[in-house]
Image 1 (tube, rainbow, N blue to C red):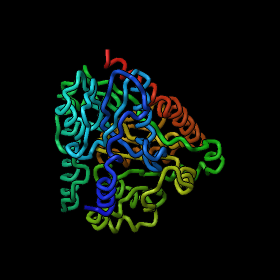
Image 2: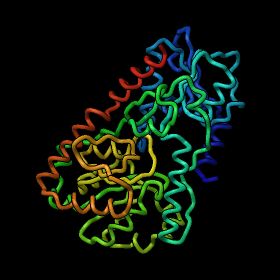
Image 3: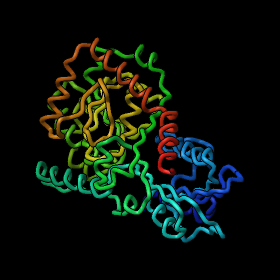
Image 4: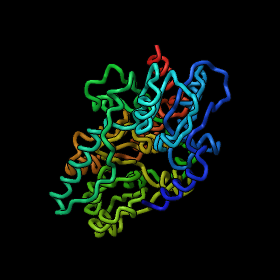
Length: 381
């Protein structure tokens, strides 16, 4: 168990109210919903500095309140048998596993809606296994799985599903398409695009690419990029993610990570000045992931005008800027990188503007809130 998890467990034991909030808005609504998701944003009043889920959780709760539900929230991963619910009953259970499943079984609500924030668990697990096996064939070493999701039947059990993703994401939930409603992810949007553009050297930026990911370097395709960029010293790859915590990965790619055109920045908050500087340096964001719901990191980078070069498995629609890889082979990814690096500075600037405009229309918190409420209404009919 890592230090952060140890501290979290200690604080939970000290104050169980961190994990279960009754009647968030102190309303007198007759209908009731138990939401299995995040509680901390409601306790601190703050949004997290590194992910949009905190702000999204507040929009989710507000949507239920607007539709006449008294809203109780349990943290999605807290032991549900340690919560004193009193004589609570719920008309609706909504949210994320494992507590979504446990709450449905405990309360037997009139309706249940699963909140799918990624691709189907069985698909995701097999996709990562496949990537690791492919890496073993290339490098002779099997690395640790980092993105394992315990198999569960939430989408089978639920009456409806709200999924952060696009049609590709929905396709991974085989047999459930009729009860799945897609919504768009929100992005960090605290960037001034004119300021970023003013500080950007367009001819130079087209040679700089950003990989922005979290846990699971192989899952998110960083291994593929580290087998491409060191061969092209005129191109720079910036790596923003906690890669150094994946010791086996760092050991396997220690030579490539020391290449002068590979910049291991480490985990960087998208709200930081350092991240803004990287936005000004790079023209492209690149993510050959094997499985996502809808990548918030790509949405955030597009909001800063970066041009997306992504796998279809990122779950992001990109419209007229950038590219979706035809496949995730090193050959195809490399060909795409080289092709875009040769575009004119004027074309790069044009596609950057298109990327930003698409993000503005599709990845704002307001769009997320509107999507969620409209799809929730549909599933509640």
